[in-house]
Length: 439
Ligand code: GDP
Ligand code: MG
Image 1 (spheres, protein in one colour):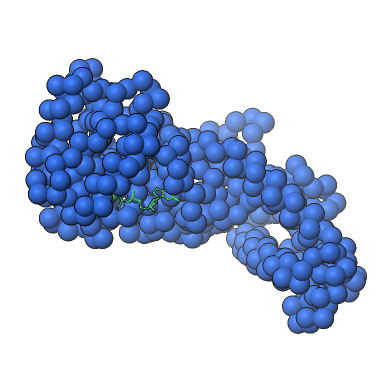
Image 2 (cartoon, helix red, strand yellow; image 1 turned 180 degrees about the horizontal axis):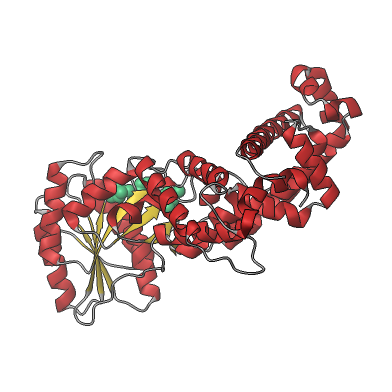
């Protein structure tokens, strides 16, 4: 890649080694992305420190550029942070598999019971679900309804018995009737409280679960850390299920669970349907994060997808902090589908179908943007602020390109976001330059 962008990576490349100095700028960017994804500060610090330590210990490999090595180090550390291997449920040699669900109210525990019941059934297991949420009669009904949908019976004793007694009776029934697995649903509260934890402890003691899974809403931000710690202290978790990954989560929780509790995320919930449960794969998740999220891969992709002279020109413009509609079209194509960590985390584990769909959508959007930009005058193309100011211009472009004015406004929004992103990248390049790269 040519001079401008290369300048920043020159720092990394000096002597062909990763040094404390030359990884500073990219590390700052990584730190910013993690904080933006709502990962809690201690975890961000720990992660950044581990990347720095690992990067400085990296042996130089001939033929592999140091900046690529840094990408690999970040990738490896992300995988480690999320637990390394995919981990499945504990399958006991004898006796039924006992899965206990824990978590706050509304996070998706009961739904996850139904999803796991379906998944275990597909593994040819005979499954029983047990309803111990005695505080809301509707909660028992909800589990019974889910059970009917997946053809799994639900054991319940109404709302008068103690949760631990219900769980024990459910387990006894499972043993007597040859069930392979029981899934125990529990009540949650809006906040962590002592009574919930005590009750959970009692249920746990009564059934000795093979798995105690904390169900966490992926939208949980920084408070995920405290939540995971409290439940792990009270109930010795074996893992977690991260739900609502289909929603608008920023993904911080995904990076916090293992770091705080030492326990892996075993599954993710990706929708309200009972089929919407997937194993959690740290390696795939890490490559998604890197593949879409950070400046390092942005530059790598830039190398591959834009010609040298264009890159040179763009780099110059970036350094001058200029970015107009002409740059936008080029860049949009290159980075469409890339976002901050937030949008990436939506595409978690093995959801390549969704990724393809989203890429298709990006392509379609690119076509629309292209049509709109083609309807602009040369002046408008190089001076985007004209459009922001004048509604009649926006209307003319909408008409000319066969879109609504609303579409033009929304394209302007996307443009503005990308310009901001590019400007921060340019600041990073400048900061990099200032840090004293040679030539
Ligand atoms: P509980 O209080 O923890 O038992 O939570 P529920 O299982 O009753 O779920 C609360 C709400 O979240 C329900 O409306 C569910 O349909 C919804 N829900 C659960 N899991 C998911 C998920 O993975 N994605 C989405 N979009 N919604 C979910
Ligand atoms: Mg429930």
